[in-house]
Image 1 (cartoon, rainbow, N blue to C red):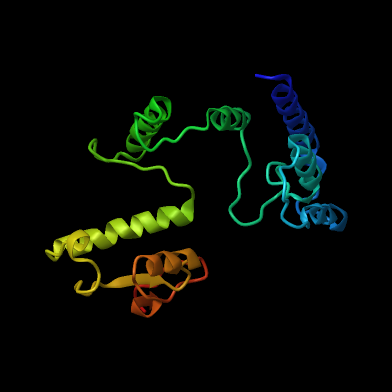
Image 2: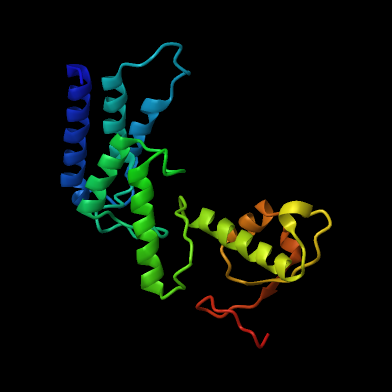
Length: 213
């Protein structure tokens, strides 16, 4: 590693430590002064490469425009905080920069994913032959779950969607609560199912479907 690379990583470390030390006193949502830091990014597309330290400097300045998600006082949406072990592990994983699609591409990532699968199966008491996949977030998880459900419903009707496609697929019944997240309907759209095909069931004040309706 050359000295410039080492200095860059050191600077990133110092910025990260400074952010963690001060995040507890940050506003949950940035104030106007903090938001003004975002103007730093308003520039034409560079025609030449930017110095690495300049990139880090801009990110450091923009840190005042972040939500204090890891500060313990930010309760917007479903964003969680971060544990020190997870934070440090993410640094290492970013340094590894692995593609975990196949074992031959990253034995370490594949092994860790395999252990996670075993733990999840054990935690939820699922059948030993259960297979698991790690996704990037809840929206992607919804797509995967609905795709699996859709394919299974077609399989039960003797229809191979992988071979025959959606064009001539038999109709399947889709039911959702009135409080279903928009990500559900977006996922259905990606899977070739329109929102007008969904039967909406009224929900109570807690978002639970009311089957009697």
